[in-house]
Image 1 (tube, one colour):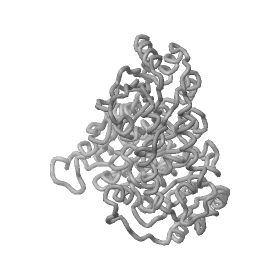
Image 2 (cartoon, rainbow, N blue to C red):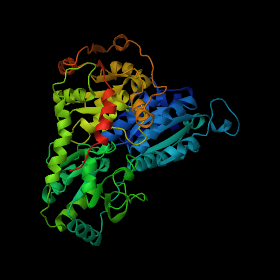
Image 3 (cartoon, rainbow, N blue to C red):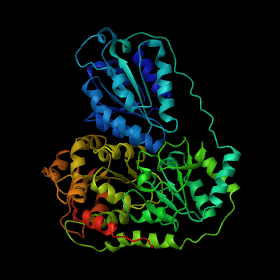
Image 4 (cartoon, rainbow, N blue to C red):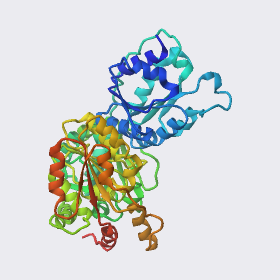
Length: 543
């Protein structure tokens, strides 16, 4: 068979369901081989969107999502989405077509050394230079992408290699044993918690990746330790649990009082790329009990006393068995929860227009089921979503907070809907981020995926303006004009709905969901609330 055909057989052997991408001249052999495959190739409108789709598929399934581009500009377009997946710890295998080996030694049309280009933004990558190594390269790419902490790998396939003849078969998939912490380390961790009067847990995305939410909840119930979530850890403990301190990440927000109260911080599955420890351990003097699949990154504000490295579920269970329940004063937890939840409740009946961010989030939460999925793009709305969209379950509020690239939400919603066709999937987009990948509306329509795009329109880069106003008390170069989003969405075949008053969003969202078709809702937002929040939190006093 051809190398391209063997390549596809290896992908099938790995259980690949979808490949997201844009074909090109240098991967036509691979595209032809996919014609006879069980793998569905999803043609996207831009390579970056393809990588975002693969990333969200990988995040929700735990299996590497696969994306593809041709050489040169196709590969460089793909790069941002691959880098985003890698820093979000989402398993992805990226495939690029490449110039033949016979012209890589010289300046040549569209040729760049893609192994060197992709090396800094992947866990591992390689070019296939010999036909017979295809099974080994593909097996390693999927194995490395899936290993904790997950991330992106990259395979570069030259066009002359793809056309060669080869005799080989896919390699057997072998699962590696999962390590757990030693009994001595478990004992050290138990003693550390026992001596603490006010420990708190910082729940990260690793809990979801390790399917450890159930174990965490049992641990919290038994030992009565409150939980603050990172943006990507949302839902590890349900927001309505009395020990949930909601989400950290905005400077001096309500959970900051919890960190100030703590004499021991227990990050569980925490990815440091999300938020610097300096923001929640500002003096670097609160000791850390590090529970994760990998050793901690060195950081002066992350003073690790003891680590439990390995399978998070097993280590939580072993620690719980060794640890005796202890009575602690948790009255402060209720105080923080009351303040944080009161902010959302305050705006439940707000009818001002343009709509307040708090009201948009309140209406959205009111119409969605516990298991439905919200995907936030990057912008000012991301900060409001992280603070106020409260999650019942893991992987139901997906926020990209590693590389945090704009444009993730619409492609991400496509990937999510393919994984969970039975759940409502809502993409939250600012008008700046939306325009970066809005062409993928055509992909959603072509696939007949009933996603809902809720567009927060403010005619500018609202998050950057927020930062500028905090530092300089004036904004600079953040304004732009928009197309008629209703006409644009309709041109792509979406149902389009306009919000013209502050009391219609809930009913509009309900209608959009009931239609079971692709829908865009254009909702003007009042971002004057950004600076009001900044001033409010600046003056906040922890009780």
